[in-house]
Image 1 (cartoon, rainbow, N blue to C red):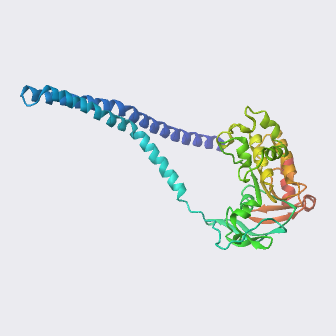
Image 2 (tube, one colour):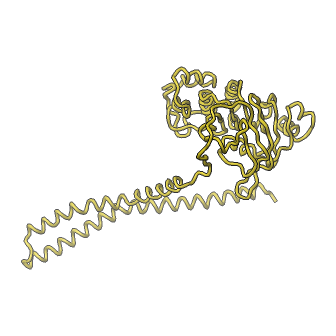
Image 3 (cartoon, rainbow, N blue to C red):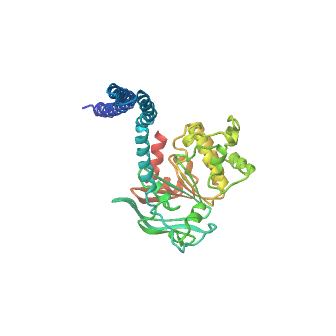
Length: 366
C-alpha cells in the first residue's frame, strides 16, 4: 500500500469537505445579505399600495379627505426608511454580537498565576537560579519529571533535545508564565512564588522563536516594556542588535509601522527588533527560545551575531535547534521526555558517546 498517496487523498478529501462547507456558508450569508434590501423595498411598496387602496376607498365613501391621505403617505415614507436601514444592518449586528462573545470569553478567563499579598520586592539577580525536583503537567499529561538544575550567575546553560522533550516548558517556568505542579524554583534562595511578579519578570529578557510585535512603529516596539528611553538609547540598542542600518533604510526610519505582528518586516528583521528591545531592557537573565530556528541562512547569521552581542556578561538560558550555536555553553542539558538524561560541556558529552553525540551526528549528516 502506498501510504503517502493514501494520506494525500485523505487530506485532499478533508480539505475539499471543509472548503465546500465554507463556500456554502459564505453563499448563504451573501444570499441573506443581498435579499435583505430588495425584500424591505418590496414590503415598503406593498405597504404603500395597501394604504393607497384602503385610503382611496375611504375617500370614495366620503369618510376621508384627500389631504389627509397624502399626509399619511408622506408620514409613512418618513417612518419606513429607518426600518429598511435596520433590516440592512441586521447582518452587521449579528457579526458584532459574535465578535463580542469571543471578546467576552477572552476577558472572562481567570489568570491562574497569582501574587501573594505579602510578596517580596526584588531589584536584581545576585547569585543563582535553582530548580529542585520540578514536575509540571498539562492536565494529565506529564511534561517535566523531577528536574534538578542550578544556573549560576554569568553562566550560559543550553537546553537541547528532541521536539516535545520539555525545553520550552522548562524556561517558561522561570518567569512564572506557568507554576510548577510540584517542586520549587528559587532565585537567590527565594521561591519564585514569594516574589512580586512584576519585579521577577523585569529580571528576565525573552527572545522567542516567534517575535512578539504590535501594529505600531519600530521605535515603539523597541521601547515596549522598558519604561521609556531616549532616542539615543534606542538607536544604540538597535546597533548592538544589528538592526540600526536596516531601520534607517525603511521609508520612515524608526517611525515605520511594522504591521500586524510585524508582517511588514522580514523574519530576520522582526527578530532583530525584539533583540534590540531585550538590549534596551538590559536584563540580568536572558532566555533564548530557538530564536533563529525559522530563519534563512543569511538572516540567521545576522541574528546570531546580534544574540552573541546580547549574551555578553549575562546569565543565559538557551534553547537551540542547531547545536553548533551552543558548543561554548558552560553546561549543556540534554532533555528527553521531561527528564535530564545527560549534562556537561560539549567536549565531555561528545566523549561519552551518548544521546548528545547522536544529536550532533544527526545534524552533521543533514
